[in-house]
Image 1 (cartoon, rainbow, N blue to C red):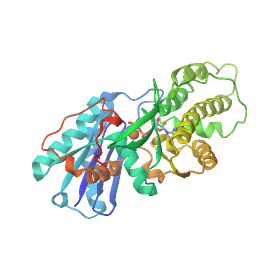
Image 2 (cartoon, protein in one colour; image 1 turned 180 degrees about the horizontal axis):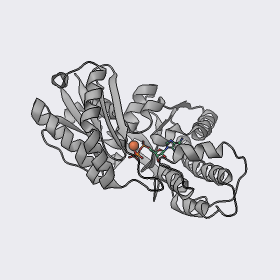
Image 3 (cartoon, protein in one colour; image 1 turned 135 degrees about the horizontal axis):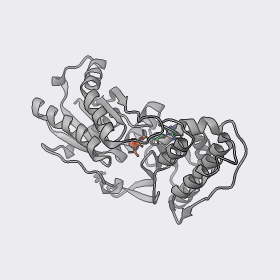
Amino acid sequence: MNCLGIESTAHTLGIGIANQEDIIANEKDVYKPEEGKGIIPREAAEHHKEVKKEVLKKALKEDEMEKEDIDIIAVANGPGLPPCLLQGVGLARELSKELEIKIVPVNHCIAHIEVAKKETNAEDPLVQYVSGGNTQILSHADGRYRIYGETLDIGIGNAFDKLARSMGLEMPGGPKIMKLAEKSNKYIELPYTVKGMDLSFSGLVTQASKKHEEHEKEHIANSFQETALSMLVEVTERALAHTKKEELLLTGGVALNKRLREMDGKMAEEHEASFHVPQNEYCGDNGAMIAYTGRLYREKAEKEIDIKPRWRTNQYKTNK
Ligand code: ATP
Ligand code: FE2
């Protein structure tokens, strides 16, 4: 059973292949907006259209496969930017017709979680899913992932990107803010917004962006990072204490942040929980996570599928 997975929900056009045992290919090409700009959906979609055949070729070549060796196609059909989603779903439809095989609709957020579970062997973790568009604390119960807390406005990765843009730094801004923060140990007071179990990052970004005249970039980066991550870890800690889960799993693009790994690791240890994070390759958006999740949920395969731009993580039935 070879499942080909297509990711195109935002900036990344990724194609991966998973067989019965493992992930056997993972190729991608990432859209980069012009300097000083955020992602422009139409442009990102144009990028995906241009590169998709080449990425497909590479993914098949990696394991010396022919298209005909593919048994099923998986595509992330939401949540995401509609023009981008249409590119991935378009390719899935094309292949499905040509090869006369079915398509498994995959929720992008669930894929971030499932691939991280697979790669770390975590069984029933509390999940901290942090990326550009999403920030959610979840765990699995009765056939669905349940959300304990989440962002009320922008995703934490987006907050990093916005602050970086205000400093004239290119996308993705997250790693650049992290590097700047490593040079500072000064803390400037910034708004810390936790509402119950939920989070809000937009006020924090606005305030941090206003500090440029008074403070050095590295001090702003450090203060922003400490504030945003502390908010996130506070809510996660409460969920961990409440659920008494024995594993904490970090996933999504922001899982690449070293300071977050350090904070999570310490917090988990205090609660006698093990801490897990997948290899870097599977943190940010990638096609392999869609291929793997598609294989896992192959019973959901259909002849025709549509895009679901606002699909929520807790709407995906896991039947487990
Ligand atoms: P989603 O649809 O899951 O929200 P996404 O489209 O934002 O995903 P990902 O690849 O999962 O894509 O995450 C990208 C985000 O991760 C970007 O906002 C980027 O700045 C952020 N990021 C990457 N590395 C770091 C880092 N070291 N520190 C902080 N943020 C990071
Ligand atoms: Fe993502």
